[in-house]
Length: 83
Image (cartoon, rainbow, N blue to C red; front, side):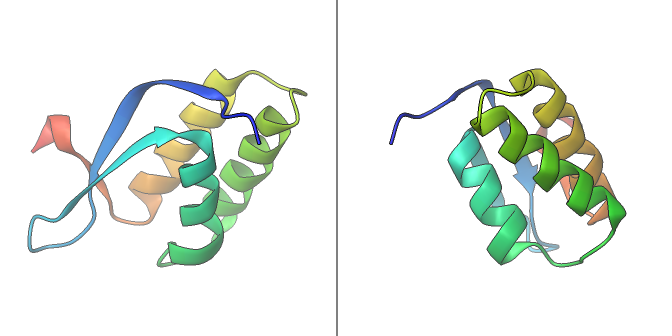
């Protein structure tokens, strides 16, 4: 499987203990959205749809990245740059 360029890694604080997770590939983003996401809301579903579309080269990766960041905020994750 070919990895899709995701650009600059997204670093999110994923717990109140200060744990962080680095998202440097779109494949990891998809895995987290499908298997590790703490809530199942509309933002998560939009992000998953956009990520899968980008993986199929049907839409820009930047759209998937923006949707992922919206879903992350909705799930309570904080970008590490804001910590």
